[in-house]
Length: 363
Image 1 (cartoon, rainbow, N blue to C red):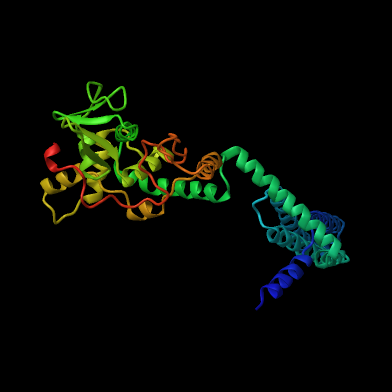
Image 2: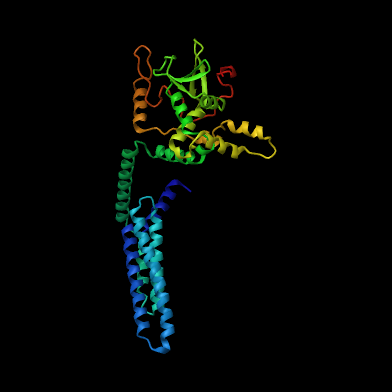
């Protein structure tokens, strides 16, 4: 089907939908008619003679049940009208259901079914002018919501969606890493470019590029992260190894920041969680303990699907940098803000290399 024909069909479909205000009015009017019918049925039951009491009481209960349903759909329509994320079809559905229950309430009460007239209000076709006015209003509301979201998050819709997916990945994969907050601190030190290994010790230097002194880091955590390929070591001329995150390590660090609740409270708790995960009956106990001491890699699906969201400010800086001709050695033009010097993350996170830079003799 040609695109013009499909667009015309979409326009006709939209033109047949009542406005949200119309849906709300119809739903609330239907609820009022249903409640009125239930009240009439109750009055009739109270005034009835003994011979018709059972029949009128049954009618009263039936009308009351339908009135409750009509009110619930009318209340739900008001909630949907205040939520911009709810599609218009849901509001229309609530209005139609409220009308149907109102008709049944009147029928059960034995009164005139005036609620059927409300159905015509939901089927009325919009004029071309009404449709155009609605579309202008819809685009204006969408633009206002987008401006508010951008002001609140500093990101466009695509990157906000990616940030939401990252939070979802974090909730599903951080606990599987078997980390504590200490592992996160080690990776953050490596991310800053100030973590190094020398003489069998890991230290965090106070200044970048000065591989001497600094705060001592527990040996076990950086070693475990290195063996699991969350860290890579680059040998310096003086024999010092500078530890930096691999792409997998950077992705795992970002996910851990998004979901710190997935971290274990202590090293013992983390070990027990890893032990419970790898425990197999056919393995010897020593093999199980050795496997539990090793950190598992980040799940491959999280590595492939994780993306670092780009803010509007970062994108603007990158575009301005490109417009100015990019890097010029003689002029010393700085790199764009979208690529921090200490970060090894990329728009597409790939698994760490199968051939790490550091040899096993590091330890």
